[in-house]
Amino acid sequence: MPVKNLGASELCLFIEPYGEDYWLKPGEALTVGPEAEGIDVWFDTYASRDCITVWLYEGGDPTKVVLDYVVVDADGTRLDCGHQRPPRLGDPDPV
Image (cartoon, rainbow, N blue to C red):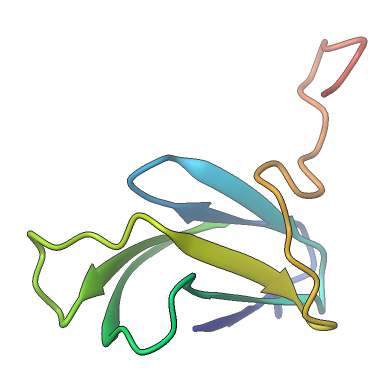
């Protein structure tokens, strides 16, 4: 599932059930999908002002959450949780 930030500020892509976050700068696109090939994945998405939350389900069955997924950038590079996470206010040493 491709996700593109068409806004003017950072956008958080939040993947459940682990609560992993990936941050997109304006104009940036990421793709989220199952780690294993051949799985029929359905995506459940929830959008708010600066965040998109995604759940992956096998065959659309909400009892079959896909736990092994990947997030890649436009070049196909696999990204880690916290990708481009902005520093928190008052945090002198952001992680």
